Length: 322
Image (cartoon, rainbow, N blue to C red):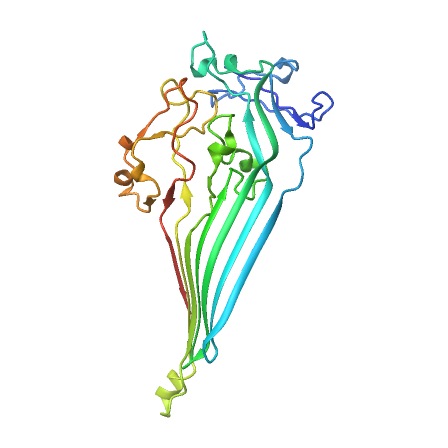
């Protein structure tokens, strides 16, 4: 049983004077008695710890936003609008997972030797939170607005866009689930490894909003009263699916880099698969066959060749009517 991982939460560089919190991790516990008699007084306060460090010079992220539009009339009050929207976001918050287990000559590359292969033997994992990511967004838009035409009104817009980032996904707060979102395969060159489509990227979208007012009927009586002055409206939204990554499970000899993080991606053997949309679980095995991928053979390489968010989920189609 492995227990006693103490997590001191550190602000700045002074670990000794920083406030501390305690968290105990027990691997493979007995579910009937998880602590198995463990007492707090049994823990060694001077033992190996895991460190969560906030960068001492961390600043507030910022973004530059751009937009331009051109509107013109095509007939009477029909209008067409063409536009562009873009943003460049910088110094986005990112969590870096450092002090992972690396390949060390003379030490077997197995999960059991993970802690023996860490560079800093005083620590388990070192989480460093800092301004390390960037985001890029560009979108072109075409809209048609018909306020009134034979009882009908229409507002239709089409977007073509692309969103990229280097791991932060724009909204990362480095807390809770965000702290482990888009983790690099290794602790080296993580910005290069994580650069890819943002989790919310949907390159094509069509939004149509329309309504129709039934005319007053010339006939009188029950039929005329029943059919006149109805308003029929609908909203239709069609969008591309969001991207996703393919990852391997926990690292073990021959199945990853065995560095203690479950963020490894495989080698891609068939590049024709890139960009495929996987929208049906029945056809997914044929679209992403197991034979198209291979495990990273550590310790020769620390990362697989497959990029982040290289495949896409099924499209979104939403129709509302009233």
